[in-house]
Length: 251
Image (tube, rainbow, N blue to C red):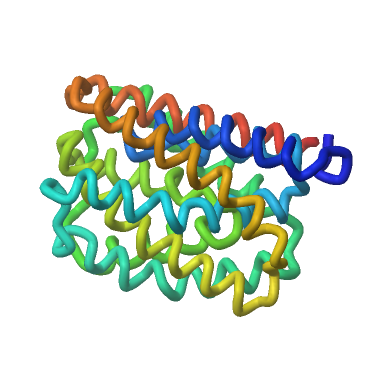
């Protein structure tokens, strides 16, 4: 099904329901919401429009997340990530304007499958990312590129968080703050590439409302998640993201 077969009210209703459910997931874990929403959006919209709609809706969702987890976020933790994110977003926006989305999906899919496989090995799962600005900047470039090109920055960011071994509250706080920069950079890069149309902003309003309600509910539920469970949840969402990307690329 594609958007051309549905009227405006139906599309708004679908967006509201999708983003409410995925907002619950994002509010509880700060990762996974977009991974779940993207395949659902692509059942209704073309891949390109799904990416753009997700970016618009996330532009309003990420400040809410950052505010809810503000007490556990630290800009010092993500400063180098942000420094790398901005050029990564620019590159992703440029690539999205001409590269086949399928190629990008398969590249990220391969990365996720490799990482999830390593997480299943006890020794590999215990490995910690070495401290250093270069590693953080490179991670930020990857996150920015993925955010602007396929709107799934939570996938590489989830890998980064697991390798940092942050506790759940610190991870959610820092991821939420980072998303503000990643999504903002993605929107500017995509707009600069001339990809947006006015009707996309009108449709996004319903999704923004649903996401806001869902994220608050998820935030209340997320307080009950301990570190061991949090790592399992993030790893599971990364596995789901890899399967979703593979399905999208093959279809």
